[in-house]
Length: 328
Image 1 (tube, rainbow, N blue to C red):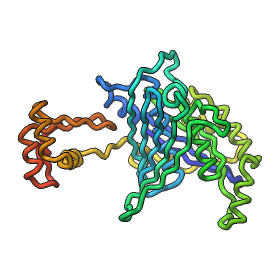
Image 2 (image 1 turned 120 degrees about the vertical axis):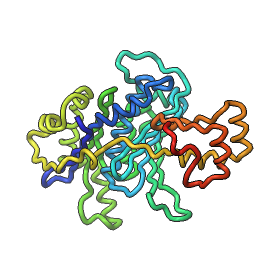
Image 3 (image 1 turned 120 degrees about the horizontal axis):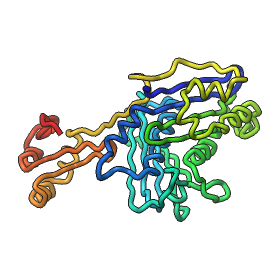
Image 4 (image 1 turned 180 degrees about the vertical axis):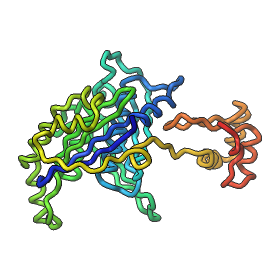
C-alpha cells in the first residue's frame, strides 16, 4: 500500500479536511533505525504521529519551505523532530536521554515522555526555501499544557491548541502510529470570506467554538478510534464518519506527488561540517579513532572519512568531497 494524502471539503460549509496515511515510507524510516540506536516503541509511535502531523500541516498551508515540528522538554525524550517539505517529503528523529517506563500498549502520554515537570514545549517553525539575507524563520511556541495549566496528554491536543492560539481556527486532529502505519485526520473550520480587515478578524475570532457545522463534523471525527485510523483505508474511514454529509473529495496525492520519506543529508554537507571544525580538530579525531564516522540522525546513513580523506578535506575541491565516489 502506498503513502497517500486525501483532501476534501464539505459542500456549502466552512469546513475542510485531510487524511494522510504513511505506510511504505514510514516502514522505511523505521527500517533505517533497526540497529543499536533503534528507538523504543513509544518513541517510534510519537515520531510517527509527528510525521503524519507535519505532512498534514505542510499540505494545509501550502508553504514554500520546510515545516518543522519539534517537541522538547525535561523527560526521557529530550527532543523529537519531524520536518516536511513542499513536495511532501518528510524526515524525523529524536534524542532520547533516559529510560521510558514499560507499557503494554506501546503508547505513553506526553507528560511521561517529554513533559515530566511541566516544562515541555512544542515549536512549529516555518523556514522559507529561498530565505533572504537577514530573514529569520517564523516560529511559534506553545507549552505542552492547556489553558488551565493541566498537562496535554496527546500530540493532537497540543497541535489543536496551537492552531487555536496562533491562527484562531478551530481544528480537530486525530493521530495514530504503530510500526506499520502513521496516520492522521485533520478537520478545520475555514475563515469566512471577506474577513481581511480588523472588523472581520474580530468576527472571525468570535466564531471560535460556535460554528454549528464545524462542531458537528468535528464531533463525528472525534469518534474515530486510533485502531480504525491505522487499519482502515481512507475510503472506508470517510464513508463511515461522514456518510450523511455532502463531501467533495479531490484526487488523492500519492506516489511521486504524495508523502514520501527523503533525507537531505549528503557527504558534501558532512564534509562542510568537518571543515568548520578546523584541520587541527579533524586530525585529532582521526589520530584518536583511526577515522571519522558521522551518522545522520534522521536516516541512519553513516559517512566515513579516513586519514587520507581528512587531509583532502582541506586541499580538495569543496564541491567534490574526499571519498565521494565510495559506497557508504
